[in-house]
Length: 143
Ligand SMILES: [Zn+2]
Image (cartoon, rainbow, N blue to C red; front, side, top):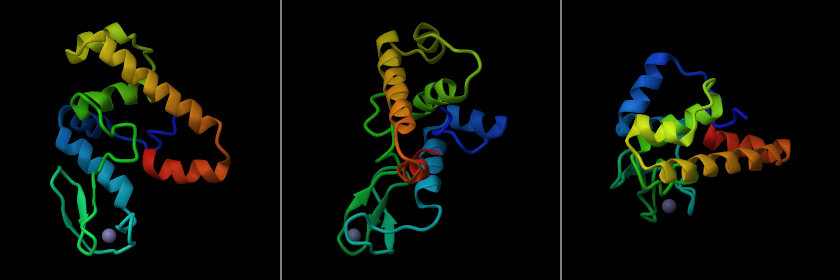
């Protein structure tokens, strides 16, 4: 159940992530390209800064990849730092917060929280049903 936040994060790191979208994108970019960048399309390893925060654009074929693509945070309709808060609590939280409580704490609609929480739970279930090899490649993105 803890595949998404496999890395142990300190309280300070978590506070930063929950308060800053910028930090969330930086965190995802670190997970995604920490071992080096290579373009999804052409495997080129040179990039320049893309349009969105911490996205990367291939210098050869110009394909741009955002820090959140390939993760559950992709196309999230609300602030990514709030999405991190929900994701972290669902994966690691000891409180078992209701979607009403998330909505209250984050000033979001309850339905929005419910939808995102469900998305995370489904992703976790999918990860649980994968083979070990599939898991390790997914965990590189999610962990
Ligand atoms: Zn490329």
